Length: 268
Ligand SMILES: [Fe+2]
Image (cartoon, rainbow, N blue to C red; front, side):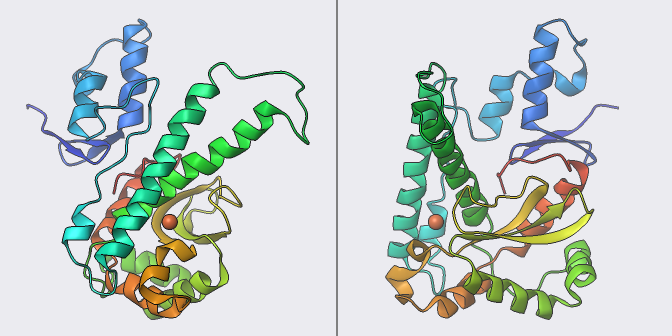
């Protein structure tokens, strides 16, 4: 039987069941090219084809980070999140793309002089690389789970939230309270170590980012995410965020996270 393939974000879905990440496709392609594995139908597509289909075709070795197009969030005119607020936020995200690429390039041939854990050129670049790249990734998760109609989660996602937090209502209260506690991000994800949903809070992109969590819902609580619309009233912003949350995207991420507990790309 001929297999049916489709690209969902960075995932290649085969026969509605098998899901492999673009990263895995690229890895297998590289292995096949190196004679490490035999070519198989599942990995017949070239990395270029996969990349084009998943919307990241312009990534190169020199500029591996390509800004995703979130302009639809502006045209959707999301209630409670103005066009100005969202467009400024997207510009900020694009800045992280530039710096992530810049640091990626510099770290290919860095200045290795004076290696030191207090200060060294290499240390500073390594630290800021994690800041820039996480700034890219978490923003993509955040924008990716906006643009929905809010409301209530359903199905497996609802069950998973209830299992962890008791009810979806308690979860939403928890999320909004966490959003008032943190200075950067709240990340809800599949905990690969504990095999359940967890919440983590981050004060900066690269401060306390969990190693064992596949994000499914990401909330940005930096002031830049809401000050144009709400000044310092974060509570009103959190209500607006919940009203525009795309639960379908969160549910898809949860589904994929179970199949790929070691990690996923931020494409939904
Ligand atoms: Fe942000």
